[in-house]
Length: 525
Ligand code: BGC
Image (cartoon, rainbow, N blue to C red; front, side, top):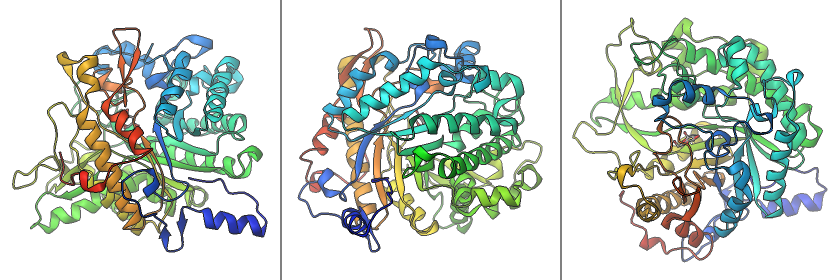
């Protein structure tokens, strides 16, 4: 990310090169005694992240229409842990207070998403535009800029307008392409002069697989053999269709961004992918080694190969066959090189194990990958470590390995860490006191920043910014408010007051003086 491209004269060009965080030989890393922001290349941005439905609340204010998540959590409260996004952290009203928290951290950037149905309450412009909704994002973006915080804006973070879902099945239909194009063009033209960094889609893999193959997330579709709570859906089919329509929508939106939006000149645009890293389940089994490539192809290449090289990975085409839709030549041409940077949301890693005998009567995305993902390897050793209250295994080495893999496979692209964070569920022990003593998150953050530094400064990976998920605790989809990811604790029982956690104190310290690397233990928790 870093600096926008400007039409420059020779002198400016020279200055830009000298200031650039990366050179032909790789990023330039200052030698420092502590691990702090000063150890990273000049111009590197550190921020925090959020998504509209997880924080805004105010779901009925200023004519906002419902999204699939509003409907899903109201209809199947138990599938959202009994919670919903009606109030969330009330960011809609309290964003100025939260911007002060970002300033308190000394951070430089903030990732937000726009709620489609807050702009077009019924999904389409002809059915009405909410002026107040449009104004809300202007005010928020202006306030960020006034506070020297660079905005990174996600156009779509899973909240399809409910009217489009009802009308034609949302992303299951190719009708979504023109409606997404209209919405994306509208927000580019509205905010493109202020926002120079954009993400079209957040985590297509999670959106398609969890929403249309496992039925874990809205709209909660799948075959019964995958999840007994699914009323409708078809695992092993729909997810591929949804991603196909999503990828075409992405390519069209990027085409508009690059060719039809004057205000967007000098901006950058990409997708936020969500790969794990994989180690072999059994080091002595070559089949397990080979399954790693398949896991990465299915989890990341599905959408990354497509936007880099113009088509799905060959391994996917071979296994999924006729269930994987095909792109036309024109679509492939638009998809190829349709991202200026690779967005990566990294949380955890897994051991990859191969599946010898798939059951063709129960197709699913996971089975197509011919792998299973294990927390322990064949010797019973865990990947990284998992504190009892932790949501996922902590394996910071996986971040470095993943980044190197992307550098080598995709021709050294610019990479933005669009998310990285630690989730915990404190259950009946949940309290301000315990929640703010989040020493595990503090260690998680420390180790991942070190691993990121190694990837950049030792492996020469061109990463230009890092966004921690999340600024505050928030609505964690199917886990409701029970899983906390924030650097700041939200007291849901007491007027949503914000409390600084130990992890926030560490991030703040890292963004000023920093810690000697020798004090950061490299082994996992
Ligand atoms: C998503 C976020 C989510 C986070 C933690 C990512 O999958 O983009 O919306 O809250 O991970 O689960």
